[in-house]
Length: 193
Image (cartoon, rainbow, N blue to C red; front, side, top):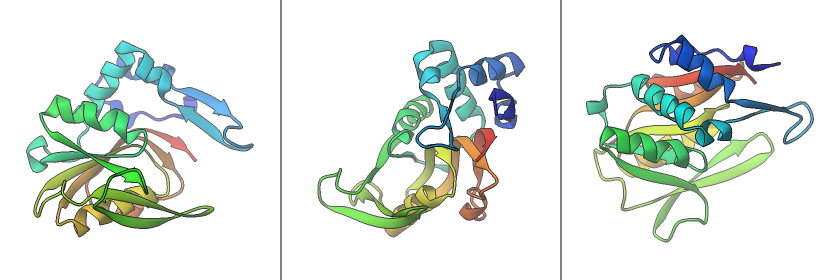
């Protein structure tokens, strides 16, 4: 599969030329991290000022909810830390990090989630989400939805309200978006899992 298997319906507000330019910067690496996997590398997008600008403009244009419907942006480790703070700054919002277990100072709240090969945990500092704070959860990729749902659970345990989810890439055919239920969602580019 080549770049032609990437659909860009989430980029419709940036124009065809900019969408094509952005997609041209997504590198496809067959057999990484293991045979049978097509790894989609977004790092070349970040290294190109024009592509990164297009990406951030597209994330803003494709917000699944109105900018006034959330107070903070939550980014998921690790690549949600690349897009989340940049989006938060563009929107005049604060940023909250949801990290892998053991990376934050106490006190934290933890949530486990299933992986295809076991379990993992995510954590959030207990003092960063207050009762009623509305958040937009941002990450680079949604596959099964395990990470996004773990983050949702953490936000809700802290008393926050998830307004929606925004992803750069969506892997199709594995129902990650469906796993998020009725929450508003957006993704910029879709590609087969």
